[in-house]
Amino acid sequence: MTTKSRLTRLAIILGSVAALGLASCGSSESNSACPTISEGKLTIATGTPAFEPWVVGDKPESGEGFEAAVAYAVASELGYTNENIVWVRTGFDEAVQPGAKNFDFNLQQYSITDERKATVSFSDPYYSTNQAVVGFEDSPVASATKLSELKDLKFGAQSGTTSLDFILNVIKPTNEPFIYDDNAGAKAALEAKQIDAIVVDLPTAFYISAVEIEGSKVIGQFPLSDAVAADNFGLLFDKDNKLVDCVNTALATIKDSGTLAEIEKTWLADKTNAPVISLD
Image 1 (cartoon, rainbow, N blue to C red):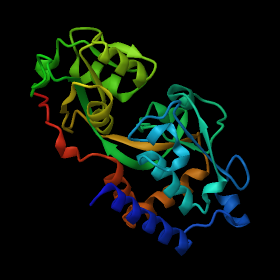
Image 2: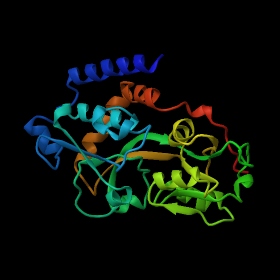
Image 3: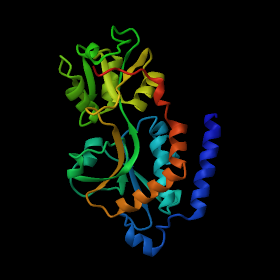
Image 4: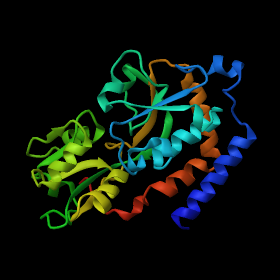
């Protein structure tokens, strides 16, 4: 199926769901059960900037990109039309800090972790992924198949991410990893060959290698195991926000209807298209 066909099919699915009226937070009764920071509006946050394939062209309002499409699907289930959705931007670390938020929920590939749950609340997962390594095709380890073959690389990753945790706690390289404020900094360092490789989630790895850094490749993805859990992405909320239950109901509906799977098929690459690096 072509991307255009998938988008057409997705639009039909979303339209049908909205027509069914499965959720109606537009009513006064629902507003009290599903409160938002601005009455009659749903305020959604994403990164500054927001990267592909999660948001296309740094324009979440277009609804293009996996997370932008998920946001609009959830909003539709909550009863919000596009004109009643407000987009705001936050830094990645900023949104996890305790304190009042300027958004109802935030999505920019936030992994659900116990540490973060101490200061914010999460929805149920809307996507699960694993970590992957991106390096250059002419790298000595471009065909690496074992974790041990990566030990001497100079790695980079965004601060505060599970990718950085993975480098430190699973790869355990002989060189101290380079830490950047965002993925843009890590990608720039890789492109300048200041580092040998970066660790990111698998969909981001596919996009970087296919579109952003010429001559790069996904060296491999890491299998899930008892020691390596999946990265489960959740919508992020202010701590103990009552809207979480409403959003979880919306997420369950778009999962059961097949809408979420269709969004994934439209915007994210097939996970089987990257080689696997053994943890042995």
